[in-house]
Image (cartoon, rainbow, N blue to C red; front, side, top):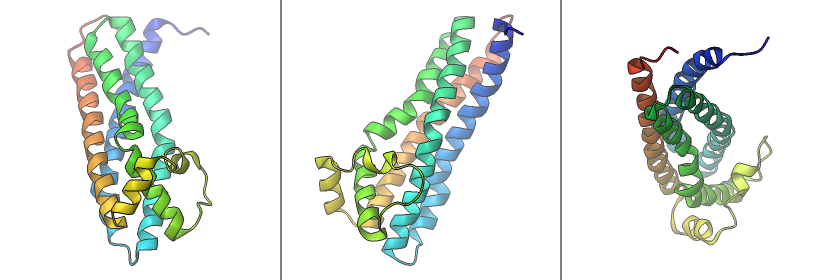
Length: 183
C-alpha cells in the first residue's frame, strides 16, 4: 500500500508536535532536574560520572529526535507552503547544532574531567565524549573550572538550548492550530 501525501501530512502533524515537545521537555529536565541531583553528589568523581551518563543518553536521543523534528515539520512545510512549519523545522533542528557548537567546549571539558576522575567510559556511545575532548578550547576550559562550575555552565547553556527547542515547538503548535489547509 502506497502512502499518499495526505497520509504523510497526518503522520507529520502528530510526530512533529510530539517529538518536538518531548525533546524540548527532556532537554529542559536535564537542566532543571538532573543537574541539581548531579551537583548534590557525595564527591566530585560521582558528580562527573553522573553528568557523563546523562550527557551520553541525551546525545544519543538528540540525533534521532532532531531528524524526526526536521522531517516532520519539513513535510508539513512542503505540503502546505506554510513558512511557520519551515521555521519550526529550523528552530527544533538547531537545538542539536547549538549543542555541537556553543556547548562544544563545555562538553569537551566535562568529558576530559570525567575521564580523569571517574575513569574511562564503559557504556555505549563513545562519540559524545570524544568529539571535542582534544580541542584546545575544551582543554583550557577543563583546566580553568571545577567540576561543579563546569556542570553549572553546562546547565545554563543547556537551558538556553531547551528554550530554543521550546520556541520551535510553540511555533509548530501555532502553525498546526492556525493551518486551514485541506490537510
